[in-house]
Every structure is written in structure tokens, then in C-alpha cells.
Length: 181
Image 1 (cartoon, rainbow, N blue to C red):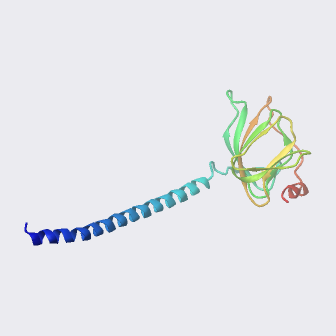
Image 2: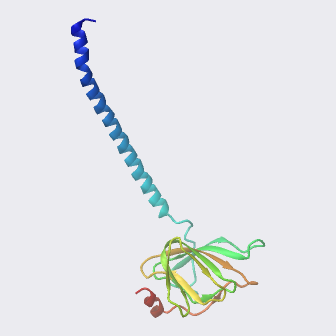
Image 3: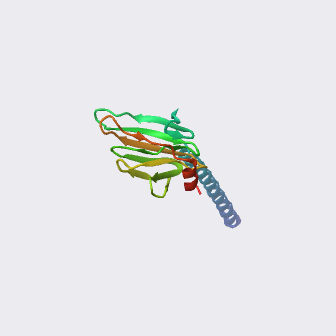
């Protein structure tokens, strides 16, 4: 290699380094865009999964014990191993149970939306997704959605003998409107 060829090689190296650097930056940006797009897609997918109901809505419940529109999807019936019933209850906005009691208590696990739980003579408690309500035996109470949002909860209802609930009178519109102020 002669002197002129060596000079040409040396002079072309910065250009090659610059081009190589630009290509590296472009590749990184492309990779970052792909990562950002993947992160956005994953976030959207997770949001969709979080907004997907855990269980089907189930069958409409009787307005004999509920005000508004509510549905029950039974999850587990009482059997020789489990002295309780388990079900997913969906309350459309404004829907709620009548006042009622459970001879061996009940547990509510809110899985979607928000609503209220109220014991007779006490202020209503706001309940939301992720809340667990442990209801003692024979406490008169009601629970349901807010006036403007639906709520879904899993109810674990214990039996005493053949009984697991005693239904009482409906929650009045006045009582319901008071907790929704």
C-alpha cells in the first residue's frame, strides 16, 4: 500500500465512523420505537384484561329481593365439603339488595366498579374493586351499586342449617339517594 492509498483510507474512516454512528442511533431509535409500541400495546392489552369481567353476568335476579337490575352467576353451590354458597353478583347502576341478614355471616369481594355497603343505623361505606367486606351474622344490611356506576362482587354466603339469608323490606329510594349524595 502506498502513501496516497493510506491517506485515502485514513480520511475515509471518520466518514465511516459517522455513518456507523448514525446507523447505530437509527437502530436504537427504531428499537426504542418498537419497545414503546410494545409497551403501549401491552398496556392497552392489560387495560382490556382489567376491564374484562371475571365471570359472565349470569341470570337476572328477582325484584322480590333486589331493587333495579341485578344478576347472579353461581360459582359454587353448598356441598358436603363447603357449608357456603359462592356467586358473582352484578349490580347495574342504581341496583341494590333489600335489607337482609345472614344467620352465619357473609363475605363480599368487590371485583369491579363501586358501590355501597350499609348496616342498619350506621353510615353507608363506599366499597370499590379490591375491597373485602366481612359481614357478621345476623347484622341487618344492604349492598349494591352507586346511582351512576355498576358494581360486581363475589358473595360468600354461609349456611346455618338450610338457611343462608333472611330477606327484609326494600331499601327505599330516600335511603338510597341519601348515601349517593
